[in-house]
Image (cartoon, rainbow, N blue to C red):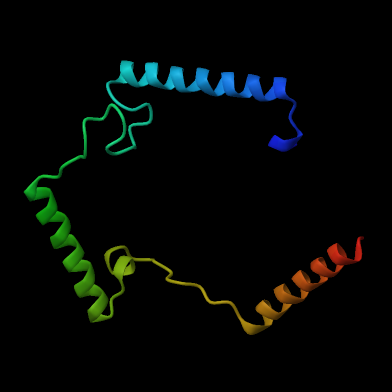
Length: 114
């Protein structure tokens, strides 16, 4: 059932429910001292953008430079830091052909009507 299938009464009720939800989210945000989810940056009621201390920025930059150095050395990004990393898995040509054939069969059934 899409929006075009709804009656005007159902649409009015949906709008009223949406407004109720937004009102409750605002109230919850007021109780929690910010946004309801806390994940939005710079949203209404947040007081602007978050800032990061210079020390935090320097620490993050140093960690990123170390990751780049490991990558250039051939150690890989995450797997050098955490042993047991698998890396990207590759699919065999045979497996790709099987999947493609199955998808073609599904589309044939859809187009054929059964």
